[in-house]
Length: 98
Image (cartoon, rainbow, N blue to C red; front, side):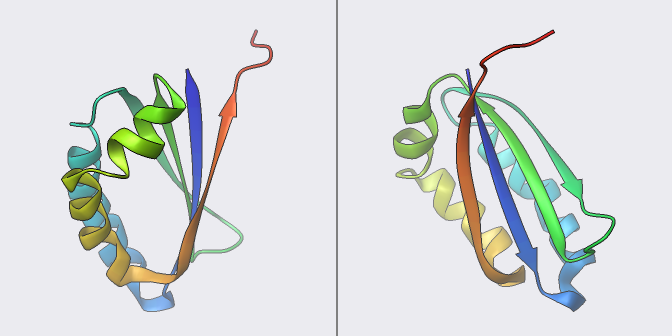
């Protein structure tokens, strides 16, 4: 399993609109092969920052399967109007878990 951590820097006046758009966007990404689940978190100290944690079966399910699909086009169309800067996505794998 791979964990994608994506950080979103949202325009100051777009936080509520981003949250609403994300409700629709999560349904889009959930249709992608290898998608296992997600959670979206809102930063307390920096209200314009959101972090999305998405679990994928494999790295390629995200980097190829999703990013090269029409689902990604839909995802970006819903969310990108609210971006202050492009999101940063990184991928992690479990080393240990208790």
